Amino acid sequence: MFDPEMIRMERDGAVINHINVDNSTEKSSLLWKIKKEYLGKSIVTICGAFIILLTAAIGIFLLVQGTGTFTRFHHTLWEFLFSSTWAPTDNSAQGGGSVGAAIYIFGSLLTCTLALLIVTPFAIGAAVFMTEIAPKAGTMVFQPAVEIFVGIPSVVYGWIGLTVLVPFIRDTFHAKMGGYSVLAASIVLAVMMFPTITTVAADAIRSVPAAFRGAAYGIGSTRWQVIYRIVLPAAKTGIFSGIILGLARAFGEALAVAMVIGKTRAFPKNILSPTNNLTAAIASDMGNSASGGEQNMALWTMALLLFLISMLFILLIHIISAKKKKKNGR
Image (cartoon, rainbow, N blue to C red; front, top):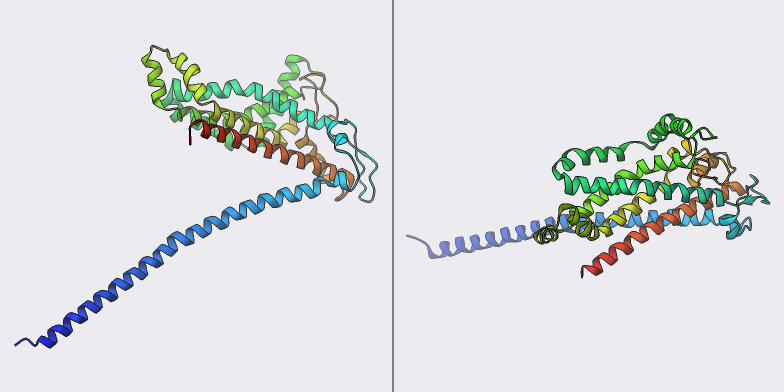
């Protein structure tokens, strides 16, 4: 005989066990969600905040150190930017010297501009080749070869420039300073800028919708007409971003340039003449200057100027990207 009371108790116990299992499952799901969602979000937020604080700390530190030339030693911004007389004292108690950095600023602008003029046609041509002309060979062979350039240390570029490029310029153009020149520094910078501009430009070209090409081919356009009338104009925003990134790297490069530019404190008469630039001056003089001295503060002001130039380049990239999104209606 079945006892109804026993059956009811067993049924109630099963229901309670089922409820307990559901509760434990919900608790496990909640713990999993906390671990996966909130923990991961917290780690990402902390890392992002740390990067922001680190960038702000670097900027504030450079601002405090770099403005000492004007606040402590009472030099003017006009003197620093436009005077060519560089004779700071190494005395931390008092100044009295000259901190005109026009030669270094002009040297940086000249070498980077010339390097940009040299590398841009080659970089865009290489990007077009590896995406439009021979995409399979470009992806399998050419792009890995270009990416190898990124991993080469700058001292290797400088050493090759010193042992190969400088003697070549000396023997070919009979340069008076033995080949150490603006041209040598610009060529070295151009080679270092090449992989950055090429990679970003290639990605920009690949992002052009295939429908654009198909429509152009449909009305009888040749491959070259499609490239220079459709693809390149559509990818120009990304190409400009790559050029700016390459230029930012060129402005910050020190060692390779210092090995071939000649490091003379004079305006270059032509591209075969030696000169100096901001990064080379900082690298060569910072270790020999007394902390807190006029020369030391002037070098920190150069570093602040380079930091502001880099921020300007980043701002330009964001402006270009914002215009592209606005044009696309995003």
